[in-house]
Figure (tube, rainbow, N blue to C red):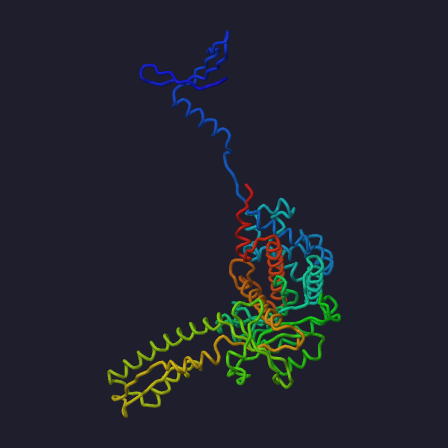
Length: 524
């Protein structure tokens, strides 16, 4: 039996490794080895640890890159693109499909320009498991690959990818959501090679920049993009609706998993796509729909008392009533819903609006009270109208301007609480849904409409500067911009497939949360 024994000599302790055993039935020390003082032991342990450690280590990104590459491999993106676009050039270093897959991977994990790709690649472990060396990743090779894919090729690739996703992951496409947005670019005004980038109504509030429009059709099952459509940023969203509907009909009428006849898919869209022409186009297609109209289009429904509404199964606090109304020239089923959550949010928003407007009215009142203004009564009223331009604000704020001359003008204002209560009772929390699904329970219609948030979430993700990002975009021609958008949508498809896969395994992450978690797995 071994043990460590300390012996004190001259006031200092020295340590020995002692072996004990029984001799003639008695415990005896049979071996004794001198080890040294406590300082000697500490030095020996430190020397041993130092000898076992490497001189240097290198940490490489692994988890997020490997997970995305695995999903791209499952979809066989490289093979599919190469099958459509053709064989690679002998001097290319990698195939067209490889370059597009790598571009999508970078969009998803760490968005950056093609010029910075090789430097980023060297910080990952990807060259080991993809067998793609850094030397073939010059930014010019990416541009060469992008030029080898035509617009018709992109459409064919997207269609085949969507079919593969539906088949491989068993996606439910019986109901899909449609939405549109635009992205601000930093293209020079004088650049005439990118007519797809135009100035228009910017949803990112950058009216000084050229815009690119993008429409998406996504599944309710995981928010997976199935169809994308790029268009000039100066065209209203409503004008692109029929293009997306026609593509949806062409691709997925035979792929529905609904119990109805083949091709019976329900498309969900918001009021921004409403027009008589669009509703007529839907009626002529094989598609069913769930949409919405502004509550003001059905004023008689807004005045119906709350007692006429009944609770909606599966939705906490939501109530609804059904009716028939003429919507865009046709008698249709409409459902008015009231959400306490939406009601509370709109009430908070109105309070904030009143506070901001009140500060401006107080400032104007103080200016008038000093009696040094030369503004006539009409100009003061015009300024008050500008401050109270919000239609809800006009209903609840009472202003009173007195005095006959600029020096005598005085302004007071107040909130009419009765008018506010009436406004909240009439409008707040209410939404009017419209559908041709006359056979669906109200709960199914509501659930379908709320899936519109999947499309909105997809666009928010594309505007996230950190993961699955449209920006930075360093392309300056129509063609390369369209290929860039394709890689962005591909990145979004992969991200949402990963998130769906994780959720089915009981891990409910956001896209960024999932990638951050995976990024914590590194290779040393």
